[in-house]
Length: 117
Figure 1: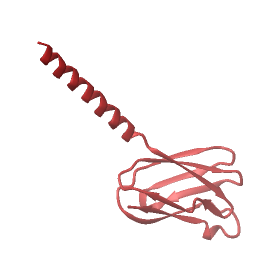
Figure 2 (figure 1 turned 90 degrees about the horizontal axis):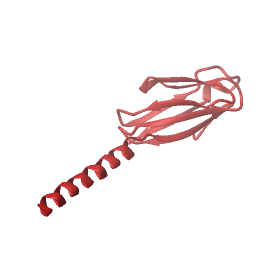
Figure 3 (figure 1 turned 135 degrees about the vertical axis):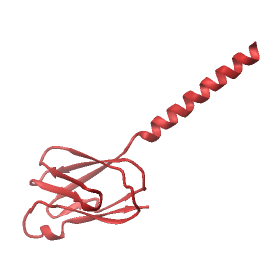
Figure 4 (figure 1 turned 90 degrees about the vertical axis):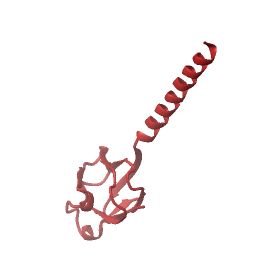
């Protein structure tokens, strides 16, 4: 009977450990992105295909936009507020993100790159 009890306890501990690992893996990585006339910082973001991330978008400047057309992600960025955007890349490659709200001279060069491996 003691052997059976040990096997049941070991199986229970293994289940707990695997469950905790799955929970840890399910948590999205948070990446802070700051927008300022006419740049994003960072201007290049490295991601892994299938890895969930949350982009925390901020600006202290003016009202701006954030758009990643290849992933159908779009949001406004409001001065003084943090906007959270979830993204799980489903394809590898290099993709452009850009400001899609006119923010003045130089707006057309306000973009960055998502590099998904």
